Image (tube, rainbow, N blue to C red; front, side, top):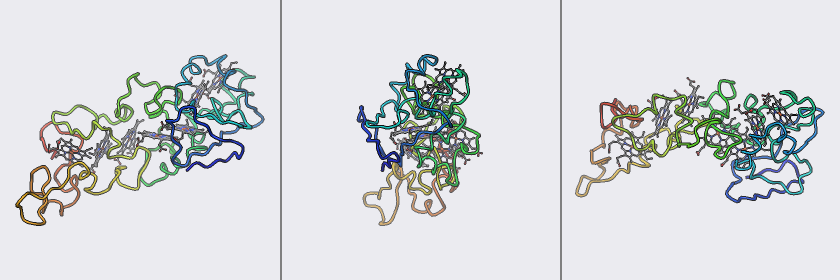
Length: 254
Ligand code: HEC
Ligand code: HEC
Ligand code: HEC
Ligand code: HEC
Ligand code: HEC
Ligand code: HEC
Ligand code: HEC
């Protein structure tokens, strides 16, 4: 659902692939006493970023009849720039790399996710949005300053080597990205899992009843799991504890 704080702003997406879901509001951050100057002024001193920006997710946002120019472009995240331009130095401008509040002005649901019991410590100031999102470049789902070729797990591998390093027995689930099993911002579940019980695994490993087998028997991967599933989840029951892959055991027991 899209909530419009500025009643005058009608949103038009020049590129229709951006999708307005997840509680996005249009409310740029404020800087006392400053007014909006527009992206052209920023280009005078920040040419490289201004040149990269048109391909970014946020550059696709356009507001018609916007009363405040800063509802789009650089100043939608950095705040009105007149005082900053006047001094021509790193003052009177918001840097959301240090102040994620600037992002939360619009991304209310992301803010809520970081308040869930299990979460990445962004609000605690231990990490920032830009360690996983590039605000200016082509692919917002890769870390700022990351490699040109973004892989699904690239931002995660910067900090979680143990899970992302190559294994002799790889679990193909990881090829679809860490977010198959983990919510990246926060979750009510331990270890930020998307699903807290064995259904996490059963989405891909359908339980089948063997043809001609006893009714009520559960087969997963051709092995009778009928009693196993009562011991706990697939990974805590003392079985597949090395879900990210193993160097010694093809069923990821350890
Ligand atoms: C007259 C030159 C000039 C103009 C015009 C200008 N800036 Fe800057 N800006 C600077 C300088 C110099 C710095 C400090 C060096 C750096 O970080 O590049 C800076 C730093 C910044 C920073 C980093 C601040 C921090 O705390 O780390 C941001 C963000 C920024 N500018 C955004 C903008 C935006 C948005 C615009 C257009 C509204 C703009 N600038 C226009 C000169 C300018
Ligand atoms: C989606 C929000 C967003 C928009 C829109 C945006 N920025 Fe930024 N900007 C950021 C964030 C976040 C950082 C911190 C990046 C970091 O720490 O690596 C940043 C950092 C900067 C910096 C200082 C650090 C650096 O990389 O030199 C400058 C200068 C800057 N932005 C200019 C601009 C200009 C010019 C535009 C428009 C062409 C713009 N930004 C549009 C979010 C945004
Ligand atoms: C002025 C409002 C505004 C601000 C400030 C803002 N965003 Fe956005 N952002 C949007 C809108 C609108 C969309 C597109 C609609 C949607 O997907 O919710 C969007 C989309 C996104 C997406 C998803 C893009 C996609 O392809 O699905 C990410 C990631 C994102 N923003 C991150 C950030 C980060 C990080 C910051 C702070 C550096 C930030 N945003 C600041 C309005 C904003
Ligand atoms: C640990 C890495 C990480 C951090 C830190 C992070 N994000 Fe994300 N974010 C992701 C990933 C991965 C996705 C894609 C989720 C998916 O595809 O299921 C995403 C999706 C999004 C989206 C689009 C989907 C949605 O939830 O609406 C927005 C907006 C967003 N992030 C904003 C932010 C903001 C704002 C911050 C900082 C306050 C931030 N993110 C910090 C990894 C991160
Ligand atoms: C900038 C570093 C950084 C990046 C990038 C990062 N993480 Fe994290 N991650 C952390 C930190 C710090 C913690 C908190 C560890 C703690 O509290 O002990 C954490 C915790 C976690 C946890 C919970 C661990 C536990 O024991 O409860 C999971 C799961 C996780 N991250 C997955 C991911 C995924 C998936 C991605 C990519 C979308 C990612 N992380 C990207 C730094 C990062
Ligand atoms: C098939 C599902 C699945 C995928 C895909 C997955 N994880 Fe996990 N992850 C889990 C489960 C289940 C746990 C909890 C393990 C436990 O409690 O012993 C976990 C735990 C973690 C932890 C906490 C430390 C630990 O090992 O217990 C981190 C960090 C983590 N995962 C990061 C990642 C990263 C990074 C990726 C992507 C490279 C990823 N995970 C992909 C299922 C998955
Ligand atoms: C996104 C889909 C997906 C998810 C989710 C997933 N897996 Fe897998 N897993 C696979 C694929 C694909 C294979 C390769 C073998 C196959 O095709 O069955 C595999 C192989 C395995 C194997 C090796 C045995 C075999 O049949 O080759 C085990 C054990 C396993 N997974 C356990 C788990 C556990 C435990 C979880 C939950 C934490 C889980 N998987 C979640 C896709 C997934």
